[in-house]
Amino acid sequence: MLKKAPRFVATLALAACLPLAAAAEDVPLWEIGAGVAAFSFPAYRGSDQSSNFVMPVPHFTYHGDFLKADRHGLRGTFFDNDRLELTLSAALSPPASSDDIEARKGMQNLDATFEIGPQIDVTLWRSENRARFVKLLLPLRAAVTLDSRPRDIGLVFHPKLNMDVTDLPGMAGWNLGLLAGPLFGDRRQHDYFYGVKASEATASRPAYEARSGYAGMQYLASLSKRFPGYWVGGFVRYDNLAGAVFENSPLVRDKNYFAAGMAVTWILGESSTRVRIDD
Image 1 (cartoon, rainbow, N blue to C red):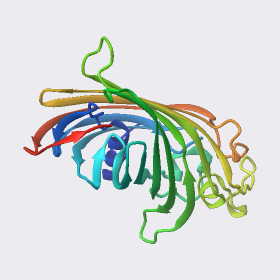
Image 2 (cartoon, helix red, strand yellow):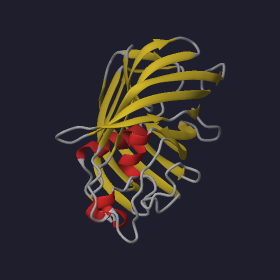
Image 3 (cartoon, rainbow, N blue to C red):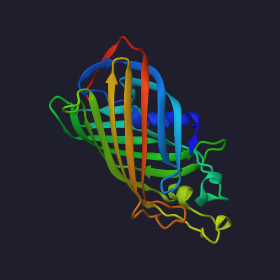
Image 4 (tube, one colour):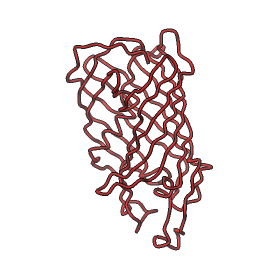
């Protein structure tokens, strides 16, 4: 099903598709542009129904001393040395109407959610020219709903290994990013997505109360290239929910699924000030 995306979904999309900055080079302090993107992802992790979006998207990168907007999303850097970095991590998830999801018919809609919290980045290995590196990312985020009366819906911990390879051999200018790691959530986080109240139970959807713990594995690969005047990029994400503490929820209909997206953006302006990027 093709849908018009909510405005904030463009921000979510950019978090997965922002260009990889080439390692150890001078880049503009900021860069702005616009383009178009297409995405396909499930209504929620574990849903057997997907939504497809085609939308205009903004393009924005910023490489300040504290605030940064790049391939890792929008974040603030509080501490940084050669191997250890403390940043602010944020994430978004889109809303889902229960009327459009067979497993959730008659239940409350899922609101859009916003997650924010500290992240520790540990550089495990880096090439001498800084063109390749492996990092351990350790984000811990608090989640709230984005509605007229925001609600606290718990905590998310998503440790992951991140490998970046800039200027791929035989593919000049192409940059590869790989991410893999487990997810963990507390009871409130899991109950928001997978809990079924007694008043919402049916013959095919028994009441269910989720608990805290392991929430499955996630793998992501992205590929991008900056051409003179424009940028192209895409990603593929695979989720496996086998062994998740909520895998027996009647709302989990698919334990293995893919999400994907691609975008083309044109650079409309950039800063004359150049800064050095080392990662």
